[in-house]
Amino acid sequence: MYQLAGEYDCKIDAKGRLKLPSGLLKQLGDIALNFTINRGFETHLMLYPETEWLKKTKEINQKLNIYKTKDRNVLRYFYRGATKVVADGSERILIPKGLMQFAGLEKEVVLFAYQKQIEIWAKNRYEAIISDEPTEFAEMANEVFSDEGEANADE
Image (cartoon, rainbow, N blue to C red; front, side):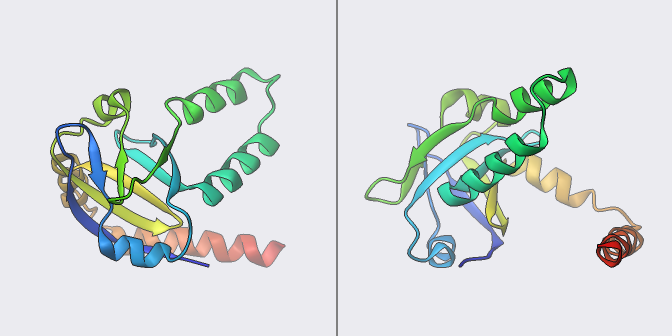
């Protein structure tokens, strides 16, 4: 079982290949380097290890009803651009051009790993979103965690 954490500055080569950093590979352990990459909720990409992608898609497919317009739209946007990628012998993944364009990825990127997924950001976009940290972060965290505690108490 793995739990990912960390920020990694990386570079994409001219062919669109991204070398996975050794610190991230250590956290992934012995799992096969098979992933699915797709659009994130903001202008970044999400990289899911294959086992996590299967869990996410199972959850989404069970919760959403294809007979409801809103649910179909969520499905379309979630799956849009989803592509299976496998790391090569040099531990690199090839990022599809359409996804690179969507996220504005050029040479310098940041991988932000948390839980069991990895966000891939253009370095300038990541720095902009991180530098805009709200002054009321402690208050927001308290609100989020308080709601979680109340929800768990109801179960």
